Image (cartoon, rainbow, N blue to C red; front, top):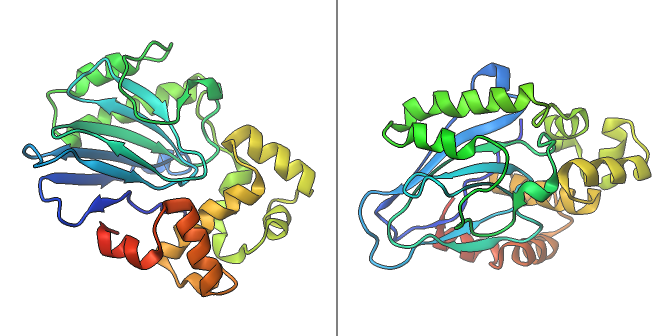
Length: 246
């Protein structure tokens, strides 16, 4: 199954911890993980968090300023977010294509403003503040359940099939064949449910897979791999792995 790589934390940063926990089996087709990132003490300088595109949608909660929460996602290129010197966030990482509410709900950059939408995100955030990460997961699960009940998160047959057989997919034509759609149908379906064209969706999946496996399984040659990696992340593969924990 699809396992997006953790976002980039520089190797010399010692006072930031990142933790993931996987959901129960009832949510396994919808949620990749619950996550937490926080400082254990004030960092010497502002912490820059390098976010890699993975086609997922995250529900993010600022545990210091509980009114600040949002539905977030990236486009095709990485972003570097300045989180300051002290922070505490938790979140839900939804798998590609399962977010079914309006794309207008999605924030594409840094989240710093109070949430004004219709979902009970602030209420959930306030309930979690005094809890440890393990205890918070029950409230995150409850929120996922409520989103499912309201049709805002739902299984996506097309993306689920693609993610299940990623090792067999090399081209957009492979992708269309796996899900039994024409190229035009695939274009419309992926754009509607993920926000990406098939070509860009495949670029993201290839990049993600290259962290776990031999890049030559997904790219024609080393030059093609380096070019694609640098265009999306801003780094060559060697500079990225030297700078960040992967």
